[in-house]
Image 1 (cartoon, helix red, strand yellow):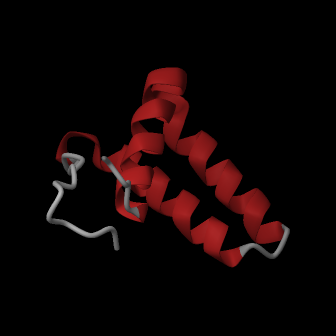
Image 2 (image 1 turned 90 degrees about the horizontal axis):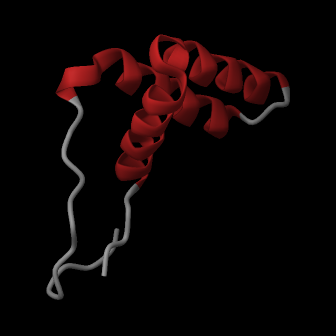
Length: 74
């Protein structure tokens, strides 16, 4: 069973946005972060800025990890 971490989710959204929006992916993520900041959701803003940073990092995206039966979800 795979249980994604927050970092895994950030990478997944970054890859999705890059596939969906191409070169505008980072802008889309930062616009979402700004909207969340304006609404007072500072945790959401932090995560979406991390998504944008990951999109900007591109080639350095980490591999997603799978839990084996001996691992516990964080």
